[in-house]
Length: 549
Image (cartoon, rainbow, N blue to C red; front, side, top):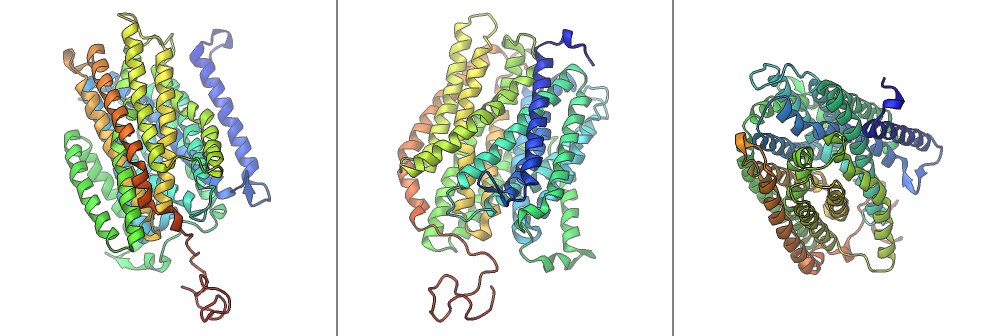
């Protein structure tokens, strides 16, 4: 333990992050153990999901903060290849929820899928702690690929499904939904900030294994929270037909067979992640197949439900644009900060905590803002909010390039990194939680996890685009990124994003019409009596025939 008199900025940052994390854990324990069924006007199950996802994000973002630096400094990849690996990995993290969401919708239910995903994630993060001697000829590199594969498949089972359970805690027309998702999003970012600071600090100052090991401990705690908090989920996310999981398939119960499929998926991803360019083609082909499948299912629905699917497809197509820029933070912006920014002695990875810290600070303001505007009839529509988010993301790059150019040949003042993350964060708050809410709100019940997974699939496309764009900056000797190439590409990306965002705002009234919000109705609970939608005294009024669906 270092003497406090010798502490530098990074040491104080880690200490403060640890205290804040402990404070939230104490408050959370107090909240969920209160005898009242709600906390701050929301069901206690929301806060169970809040803390489970917080620990999952602690592990994911703690590892993400180190990944590109780890690839370049420990495994000795070029900047271009490191960006491609980063993009392929993060894109697969967001594409696997398509399968995980489908299996949850059809067989496992969201809760079992989340639980299995958490187990795989815990194994994956602990495997990251086996670092070997470094270099691409080290046999320990295979353990690294295995760790990535476990995390990718685990995320597939967990990510979309835990977001769906949040929505299941509320009726579809409940005005608390956007607020609930914003609170949930704050849990994500509390974990992201703490994980980035603590795991990043340990990884860069003590050893890579310590940083990745801390991420593994965080994921294990998330698994424990989810198991203990099951009763507070009020039966949400259970299998659609529980008895079906006992059917025999290949000599096994269907449930166990599906878990075996998950482990087989780890082996497939282990091979795939080592060929990053193939991931791009798989994304393109599987994205087209997913779009056709969603359209096929949409044409089975009534006109209004079909229009809502079309609106959701439009929103999903915005994901690659936004996240292709945003995810530069973990790739090229991470390397840019390491080499060209006046960090004043602070480890590079810690700068990735700026975004989640901004979200923690600004999240409540945005949640309150939407509710205030909604009550006055002034709230922007979902597509308009998302257009505003893309405009702000573009401006983040414009401001960063302006600041770097004005610095001349000197290191870029750290102020412009803070401004970059501020604009990207306000853009994210206008787009991501609102998009999550829209997917759950507009989906018909039997397509809920599929549409949420498709939403994350769009994010997967953006992550691969981010890695590809980052690889284009590696024009220097040995494929290393140059300052000039990075700034030129950042300027182009910023201007294009601003133009796309303005276009989305202009067409947002047309997309809003497709959402048919005026006729959106709550689903009946699964145990409602037949006839509950009809008035008292009518032939099928609730209670006349004691049948359930």
